[in-house]
Amino acid sequence: MSVPAHVSIVEVGPRDGLQNESLTLSPQTRAELINRLAAAGLSRIEAGSFVSPTAVPQMAHTDETLALAPRQNLRLSVLVPNLRGLAAALAAGADEIAVFAAASETFSNRNINCSIEESLTRYAKVVAEARRYGVMARGYISCVLGCPYEGEVDSGRVASVASALLEMGCFEVSLGDTIGVGAPLPARRMVERVARVAPLDKIAVHFHDTYGQALANIFACLEVGVSVVDSSVAGLGGCPFAPGAAGNVATEDVVYMLERMDVETGVSLDRLLEAGDFACRELKRAPASRVAQAYAARCSDSTEAPCDADLPKSFDATD
Ligand code: HMG
Ligand code: MG
Image (cartoon, rainbow, N blue to C red; front, side, top):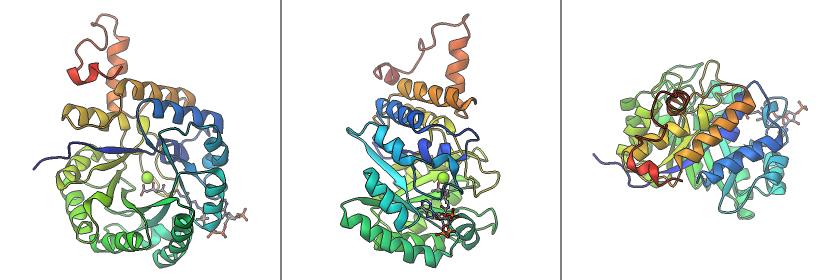
């Protein structure tokens, strides 16, 4: 099996990452993070969400983040749960919105306070309205490989939610392993099941790394033909409605793996490491990215050669 020659990375750190950090960053700092991620070559970035600030206080003032963030050569997306969120996203000039459904009834109720069916009815209106304004809509599905409340999740259920999201006009569905319980073969089988109802170029994968399986899962899905991968700089975050879930797979780790396989991403690893370092300093935490940890260890060891001395050739061109 082969993997795609080019992979698009959707950077979700400023939303999925920051929504579950204990420190809340100001809109200015969030915009500066987006600025640094864009400078690293990321062109699809999730900038925040227009949800209840009581439910997710870290995402309050996303409108200010958008107003301060750079806009050139960028698609800034925001999560919206309802028409009210869409109105705020349109007023703030978001380039793209994302609606978020689930493949598990209990998770749907805990996360957005309604059943899957009710959410799809609500989202059909949101997506239609967004498209009327020329704004593209992405559809998320949570708990595609397991639910914190219900356990096993049937891939047929994932496929039917994916089908409904595409039918209402979403341009892409992102399959979320919200609690990071997946493993490569179940992940591949789940994507193959969804690919029976959705073209592969409309499928993205979104792995949280709770059990350390995310990179292996991504590789398994690339082999099926998926070429859009969500990730979060420094592996920030988790999900406030999925107890114990770790952050998304780190963007640095995904970029490193893809570069070493000669898969193009358009992202500069050096600049990305700088953006991750900025985020971690602001959040007063260490990066979850193994690549960031390895680079930091090499650079701090003064007895070693300069920290980029033995980088693979492909890294030399990034700066
Ligand atoms: P509800 O209780 O059904 O709706 O909430 P409501 O209309 O009764 O509103 C409840 C409160 O939210 C009210 O405020 C509304 O004004 C306010 P209160 O009177 O209590 O002060 N509200 C809003 N505020 C701002 N913007 C809005 C908005 N709508 C209502 N658009 C609702 C339903 C979904 C709105 C609420 O439960 C909510 O916002 N939840 C947050 C959900 C969330 O952000 N979850 C995390 C993101 S999903 C995720 O991380 C998974 C993903 O990464 C994929 C994966 O990993 O699997 C995408
Ligand atoms: Mg997520």
